[in-house]
Image (cartoon, rainbow, N blue to C red; front, side, top):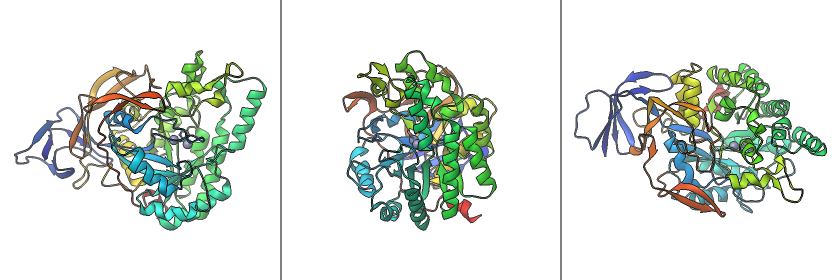
Length: 489
Ligand code: DUC
Ligand code: ZN
Ligand code: ZN
């Protein structure tokens, strides 16, 4: 197939210019003007910005909770990411019950996700069951194209929790083979103390979720993680940074030349904690995620941090927990809602670009170049999939978003599907949207709609809005990504 995308304005992390893009097969063959036909297809991008396909650094599909139950939407729902302009998700592969990480990666790619993923998919390992084998698995994961791993400093008392010794051991092993370490940084004892105190005082409403996850608990864990990473000289990504206190730790570390990358998420940039004050607990539970949504005052800071690059990437942290599972918050025995029983996480892969464009670019808080950098280019560099992904260049995969800056709308579940039965951004104004999306040269979204067949998919007795025939490919990541470049400075 020879496809010409013509008359658009190409936007990359460094540049913006009018040019046509010639696609041959799955790759960008040339960028320029006056290409000779014939073409199998010509796509007119007049009035559109032509952006690299989005790369989502942080997606959870079919994630397992501590009992090995999936509390996240199935892979068939990943079409919502494509519809929102994200052509590659970097998904987390947790341990399957009783399986090591290497086998879990194989199981995820060959069983769970096989033939179901709509965008392309890269993987982070996510150690949720540290065993004697874990450290020797780290170089094997890297060889398999999984050059990053997440560890949880929170959730003490569960298999997710990594104490400081395990964390240090993993950092040492990762540093030897070019793996990036990622951490969920919250101090578990701070959380447990606050949560126990709230329950003892009879406080179980959703708002106690944010009241018992104080910013200092996040900041303390961020600061400890940074010290460990720096001591071992292992680059680290602090994921889902939600507040000023945690961001300041990262700003200082980067100013000192430490190889630390910060990630924040759209929900921290545009939503605040009062969403959880909703009088109906079913509704309030939708915004229970970790770290918690914060006071509005944090938002300006997070935008500034992205702009000035002490937070570098914006991942969705898509955790589409359906309402039926949010409703696990109902404590039948005591006949009351209990915020501690609600699975943590919000869906957001579909609205990541919409939120960043509307409240970043359109609001004058970031340039289009910066938008591309935080949503596409830096996440690809971080995960070792650049320049195949994350930019518009000759030889890169032809993942393109024709972004219509004139679109105006209001976010609703119908217009902005999430795969589950609610949208946490419901009611927000939206300016601009992905009009047409190409994945490796194939048009998969037109006029803002995914072209595949949408159908109901049932997983664990819950119905989701899925799509058939996932065309997504596994994109193996290379080790020694962006974090290691910082280390050399
Ligand atoms: N951490 C995440 O990254 N996502 C959902 C829940 C959590 O604790
Ligand atoms: Zn986390
Ligand atoms: Zn996450």
